[in-house]
Length: 150
Image 1 (cartoon, helix red, strand yellow):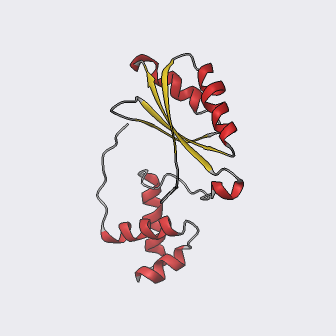
Image 2: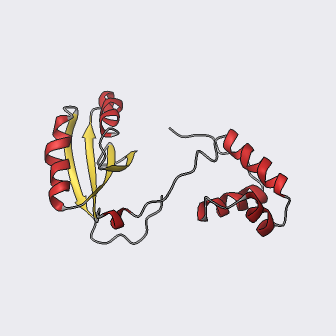
């Protein structure tokens, strides 16, 4: 679903950029870097949370350090009426690290992280076939991940 963009001033944008780089930055650290008061930073962040610009805070995990070095992209073709059901089922699978609906050759694109080609194979040939509404899958394996963000 697309949402409406909100107007943000330069201070809001700088706060967001700092939190992107370090989600654990304190109000004081942000205030000092931006040259504004701590209360200003606190109010701005609370407002950004309230209007949904900041959706939450999470740790950024290096999946490769957990042994999940295989990155696969699986394009799925589904009937439009079945999209929600397929998404609901895919969200239950731990292998799925990113899930988007797209235009073009696929209806849904799934990013999968796996420890081995065997685990990726299991996702493609065991787990996804259990979702009967999936008409066709096309799998691509990443050779090298150049840039990846949370």
